[in-house]
Amino acid sequence: MRFLKIDPFLLGLLTSVLLATVVPCHGAAVPVFHWLSVGLIALMFFLQGARLSRKAVLDGVVAWKLHLLILACTFVLFPLLGLAAHALFPGLLQPDIWMGVLFLCCLPSTVQSSIAFTSIGGGNVPAAVCAATASNVFGIFITPVLVGLVLSQHGQATGNPLDIVYQLLLPFILGQVLQPWLGAWAHRNKKILSFSDRGSVLVVVYAAFSDAVMQGLWHRLPLAELGLIAVVDSALLFAVLGLTIFGGRLIGLPLKDEIAVVFCGSKKTLASGVPMANVLFPPASVGVIVLPLMLYHQIQLFVCAVLARRFARLSAAQENTPAMPVRKAG
Image (cartoon, rainbow, N blue to C red; front, top):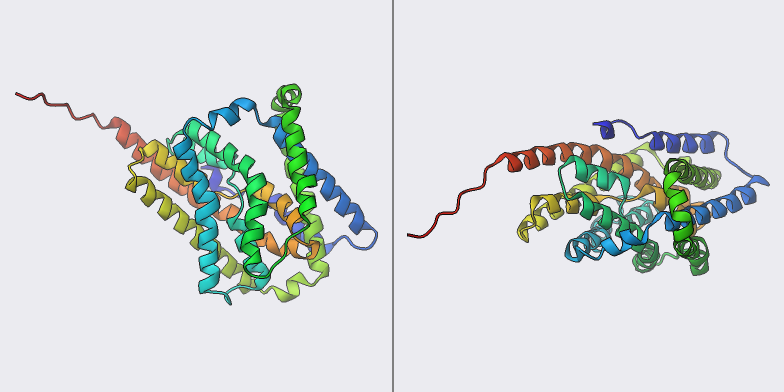
């Protein structure tokens, strides 16, 4: 039940936000943190490419129907739900916050927690590994396109497309090219590189919120707005969980595959989402835009921890139920 506890990474994020609120970077420090963020984002996606084995890519092709279903939940169902919510309640949240919700809907799934919850629930872990990996790989290419399509419908502009190429795509491709030489080293130092990834995100969050604070973030964002963001995030999560459970049973998925679809299809990555936001949006908007994602991250951990235990009981009951004997004719 460790996922019911507050994630240390989330505590680090909250500390970064608090530090940016009390001591925001300004003046000569702004360009320093800007270029530091650019370099750390490029390094992060380079290491992602270096860590991803060719076998993981090839394994993702095997159960292609299951993976397509998970990808459809991540990159089709979520954006459609976000657009529907915005169309039905356009005045519920501030425009920048709605932009953050729509950005959240376009992000890929997580890897670690998707696999962990699938394992706890007794689901198809190999499929979860492949699906979550595929979601993150495709997300590097799909998310910028989706964000551009979704936000263009509301007259919102994203960042320079060349920044996306230079900071996200090229470092990832270079890491994948060098993977045969760097893969073993990256695997051996996985924990150290994980701290590097999270440290990069914390720096980006500090720089983004510093800019937002200097623009008067907390003066124009009342506490009640945070509560509304949590309500919208929760509604999105429960809608996707309900639809994936119902859809999996409607098409007759085995319970193990259903569990993988539910947990991989409902997650959104914070670790990649914050750097992507830093590339896709103007600096003054990033701090506000990532707020819905930061809240969704913790909500999904709490809710899915409870759901994983329930799935674990269902899986255990199914395994302990003896198969009905087949009666021969005559």
